[in-house]
Image 1 (cartoon, helix red, strand yellow):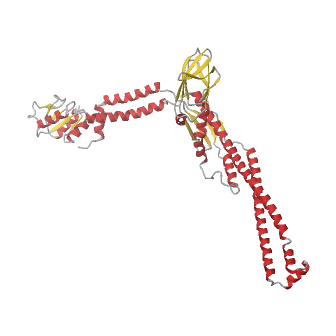
Image 2: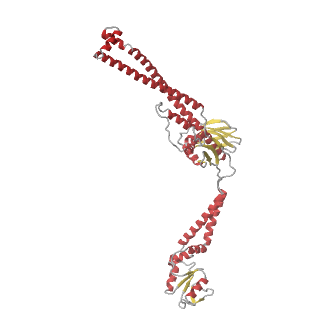
Image 3: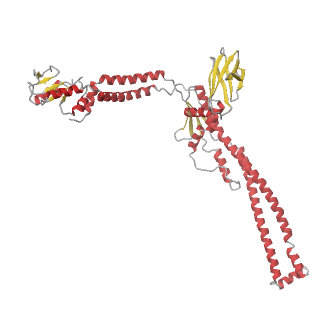
Amino acid sequence: MSEITILDIIYTFRYRWKLFLSVFLLTILLAILYIFIAKPKYEIKAVVKADIFSNKITGLKLANDYQGILEKQLVPMTPIDKVGSEIELIKSRAILGKVIFDMGLNLKAKLPEGYHIAFRKTLVDTVQQEFRYDVSINNGKVSIFQRGDEICAGNVGDTLNCNLFLVAIEGNGSGGKGKIKFIKPSEVFEEWKGAVSVDQEGLTDLINITVSHDSLDLSREVANQLAIYYVNYETKVSKGLMARIRDQLLVLLDSTEKKIKFLNKYLEEMKMDTIPVLSFALDAMTDKAVAEALKWYFRNPGDPKLKNLSKEFTKRQFKYYDTYELYKTIVDDRNKIIQALHEVDLYEAGVVPSSYVVAWASLPSEPVWPRKKLILLISIVFGLILAMIVVLLYDFLDSRINSPLQLKRLFGGRYPLFFSTKQLKKYLLLNQWERIYCTGGKLEGIEIAPSMEAAPAVCINPRGLDSLELIQMVRRVGEKPIVFLFE
C-alpha cells in the first residue's frame, strides 16, 4: 500500500526510540528544574459582601424622585449588573488607584541591611516621570538626596516630607547607603492592576479580592485596604450625593420663598383694587348712590357702558384667580422642597454601608505557584507531544533511510516491506522463490543466491543508506522483483 498507516508511524518511533526518549526525558527534566528554581507565588485573599442594596442607589433614587423640583437630574438611573459593576469599581482608580496613592506603592526602595520602609504615602499623582533618590543612614540619622541636594532629613522612625512623598524608615542596622525610586503613578497602577484579581464567588453577592505580589506583607495590606476602601466608598458617595441634593434644594427653596412673598403681596393689592371697582364705576356713570345704581343696572342690562364695565370686572377677576392658582402651585412646590430636605436629613443620618468585610486577608501557608503535580503532569503530556513532533520532523528532514515512513515517501509503497526474516520467508514461499539475493549478507533460514543474476528476487536492507544511494541501488537491480527488509 502507498498510504502511510498508523503502523508505519509506530515503527518509525520504534526505530528512533532514542531520539523520542531523549526529548521526552529532557522536557520532564526541564520541568523539574523549573519547580526547584521558580520563585514561589502566593495569593492573599480578602472577601467582601457586595453592596447589592446600595445606599448609593437609594440616594440616586431619592435624587430622581425629586427631579421634578430640581433643576436637572443629578444622576441617571440605569439598569446595571450590580455585582459586575462593584467588581469594576474595586479595580478602578476610584478604589485601587486611591489605595496605591495613599500607600505610596509607587515608591521602590533598596535600603541598607537592617532597615525597611515602615510608612510611605504619595503626595502628588500627576507626575509624568521617574525620579531617583540617594538615601544615607548614619548614626540614626536619615538623609535623602536628589542629584546631590538634600530634600529631606530626620531621625530613623520619623516621617519625612520629601516634596512628592512621605516616608518613614525604621530599623537598627549599622547604616549605609541606599536608593529610592519614585515611579510614575500611572505605570504603578497598571502593574498593580495585573497583581490584583477581583471576581465573584459563584452566584453569590460575595466578592474575592486576591492579590499576588512578591511581598506577602504588602499583598496582605493591599488586599485589606481594598476591602476597607470599598466598604467606605459607598457611604462616602452617598453622603456626597446628599450634600449636592441639599445644596440645590436650598437654592430652590430660597427662590421659591421670594416668589411666594411677591405673589402674596400682588394678590392683596389686586383684591383691594377689585372690590370698589363696580361701586366706583356705577357712581361715576349714574351720579346716584350705589343702591339706586344697582336698580338702574337691573332695569337697563343692555347699556353699552355697563357691558364694558362688566367685561373689565370679569377680566380682573380671571387675572386674580390665575394669579392665585400660580400662588398655590408655588406653595405646593415649596412644601415639596421642605419635605425633600427633611428626607435628605433623615436619609443621611441613617446611612450605613450595606457592604462589609466577610474575611480579612491573611498570610497563606503554601504558595499557589509552582504547583508541582500540575507542572509534572503537563510536562509529561507536553513531552510526549513534543517528542512525537521532533521524531516525525527529524524523520522528514533526515536524508538517510532509518524508518518505514521514509521508504514510503521515497518509493510510494511500490515494493514490499518486511520487518523480520520470518515475514520475508513466508513471502518467498508464497511466491515459490527458493532463494533470494540479499545486499546485507546472510539471512537466518533463507537460502542466499551467490549473485544478483542467479536469484529470482533481490532483498535490500535500506537502514542507514542515503536516499540517493538507495535509488541508485534500486536502478541497478533492473527488472527483478525487489523487497525491503527493515531490521
